[in-house]
Image (cartoon, rainbow, N blue to C red):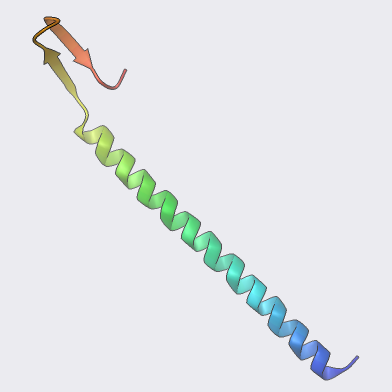
Length: 61
């Protein structure tokens, strides 16, 4: 085998692995961000009363 072909092949493989790791990292960051936003939304949700209906409305249901 030619050393030049091996070095180019190794470089391309390394680049593909780095790209895959970067994409996975970005996906995990997005999932964490969405999870944090959902947790804040659920923490802010609560039970309130509707004066027109005269009973308690649970927005989590």
